[in-house]
Length: 232
Ligand code: C5P
Image 1: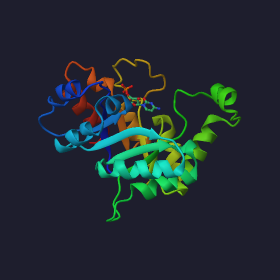
Image 2 (image 1 turned 60 degrees about the horizontal axis):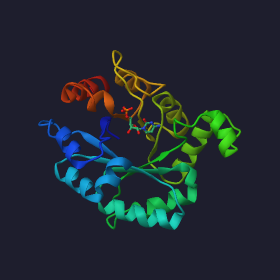
Image 3 (image 1 turned 90 degrees about the horizontal axis):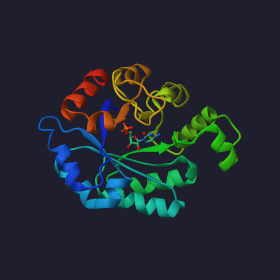
């Protein structure tokens, strides 16, 4: 799997998204479309960004009964996205159904990755709200293992977990890591962060970077700096 920088296009309209993407006149970055933009603009935004030559990670985090997820994944697969995701908490059966739905007639399919525990969930919340008593690191690694055994390609995880995920699930199991900040940058609301260079060192396969690029004075330069630190 190729190392790449994925820009989180966390905008609430197509207009703002294209204003941003128009700045990139050279290399077309890999972009992440999340719930906010997808719910605002629908599948048309995916087709339009794809037609401009970008790779797309459609971050909709599916979680439902296996049959519903299978049928929804079939629809997303027809949108020709390059990567999409679901919640591992939906169970192994749901993940297997997702793979079935996602696989096209010619056998190809987008990369499918699982969200383990959201980084907004801490051990205390897991215990109190979900009645999960195990340490969070064990839960994350267990979910990653179930995802792997269900045929998924990888997980979304903190860059701090990427090394361990590779140890447990193998180095070809893809790690996609948000929470990336430049050494001299603003952390914003992210707590546990890493620089692109550190994420590279620890073995992340893809980094997802939002505000350090989207809110930069010169987003193209910020993107190029990420690529230079992470990919080169
Ligand atoms: O702006 P920033 O670089 O913090 O954006 C990170 C992106 O990654 C956002 O789209 C955020 O929703 C997503 N993300 C995250 N932490 C997770 C999962 C997804 O920051 N655990």
